[in-house]
Length: 279
Image (cartoon, rainbow, N blue to C red; front, side, top):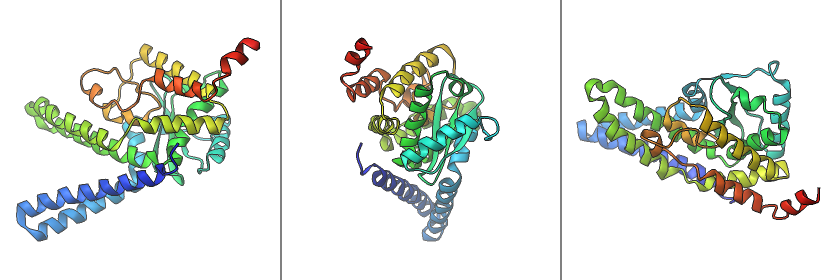
């Protein structure tokens, strides 16, 4: 894992802010000169500030998650708190995704303010090592500040996609234009490498790569059996890609293949097969 990942993600967030203000400034200047351009830039700064402070709540609202109280699942809260301490981050706020296959996602600003959501199936999974592996993976995204970029990008990309709905009979044409534009925006700022880095850090947090490796296989199998309905623009937030890779959803795929991730995790402990046979 690159030690520069948090710095790199902060720089990406700043680039996103500058780009947003620049585009708004150009639009304002084209419409009515410098005065309107300055107003548009100021509005861009307000939007950026709102995204910085509230994007995690917006992301949780987009996927239909509700906050999970400690009294509802004390064991899960305790597990997350323990793993967060190992990861060197503050315990994230916990949310529950009411529907969907075995899934988890993280959103927020980074180490000091974040949110973690899980589906009931994952919460009830009878394999503590796998649950801890998935949680550790999301905590790794928080530690690396991947969530800062992911959350901002997802909220803005989803806004692009949803804008097409105001088009009436032009909706399909607008989606044809705005969908690929939003997807290009996502791929510009989010690299599949962030998943490999998070997997590696999760293995360090759990002191073993095999819980997460087994969980990734289980999550992929579950996603093939259960249909998941949400905005395809939210794909970067999840541990794996839960969407069928066709149509609009195929444009937003940012996760590397699960098989490659599992292989890399197993390679962190190359002697695991021999130990398994000996047991």
